[in-house]
Length: 540
Ligand code: GLC
Image (cartoon, rainbow, N blue to C red; front, side, top):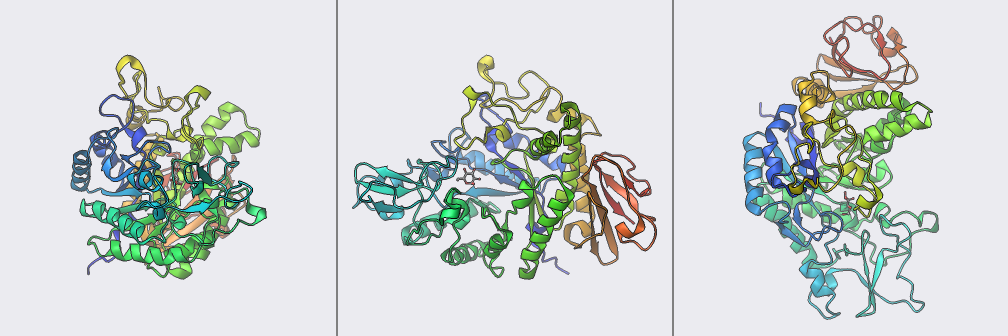
């Protein structure tokens, strides 16, 4: 029988933020050749697919999410030939590669916008969203831009007296997808990269490519929220169907993973359409969830409730380049609970380990953000070194590859990379953790190998178990194969009885600990008690 399951339903994705992954030329900024040099490490880890954040030509106002040429590599990151070599080597190593596609806005230095701003009669004027000045000089509506919540999503072009729309920075004017030229140009961008062999796209703020043509004010009760988190209009769905047809016409199950940054899981689910829009959409509520069993249970219920009826496949993500890393977030939870700093450091790694078990065993496609496999915390950024308009530098710190003074980033003159390293890089670095079989890096590797090995984890049915407060438990089953995952979110050991595991016999009898987040009892019969902050995967 031919397996018709598309690869992206079972793959584990790894997000690379190229600036901070690995630097091949000593300029302090990571690059494509740096990624290529570390493919073996990702294969060793057991990753299936890479998502590369933008490496296109850009003035870097938003570090590459402001694109000035969609079909070229910024010299900082290398050349198109470097890209071709990277993708060839990745494919040879069995890795898929998806790239970021930023269709909602360009850079203000993109030739289209440079032309558009040259005058109201220019060929590309209508490719962007312009509105006349209002009598009182205020912006055309009350939309708020992302990052600086006091800033309107509009900038006045003094020359023409008209305003242009930008849901993000002033240097990121929104394209007008009502304009046929924009649609065909952005479709051409997709074809350009598909023809070069990419396995798909991560589509940036994809829910924003359709806008209400009347551009009405946001309701006053949500008027402080960036409009990009509110924009949800029907026309976008037709645009996604067209994108889906274009991508699906290529062989090899290419995939579009959408960033639909809306606040409700129900709303996000609609962007899967009837299996004819996005293949996958990021599921962000777990990324914002507190480290509490009940919070996670609610996220899971909401995900299953919204996606299952549509036959839509979930995704799971703990961290990315836009938010504090999860270990940092769980540290903050601890600080709220009044733990001392030493306890917190130990516990936040234990929580990050338990979270990794969730990420890899829930039903859906997991996305790992570079460095979480090292248990990295956000870097502390001294005020003089902050560079991101959205305050996201901490989670974008360079990966420490080794314990040397430059951590594998040998910059001429000892200047160091573009951002400071994360805390404890002398001991918490790739080389040190790879040498230590008890490290979180090895836990990730064991988890990925278990997933690869166990069909119940990749595509088994999902069922929540009845567990005591503070513990989340679920079963994954396919045919006669059954795995149970138990996660203790509390600082105390918890004993489970046979009611809590749903088994007919007392607590986990006959089940073996295939994997535990702290390495304890692996391979032994499950004793019926979970340690503090411990997660286990049990099998018969
Ligand atoms: C997405 C990206 C973010 C970027 C924004 C504007 O949210 O993840 O990094 O700043 O879009 O492109």
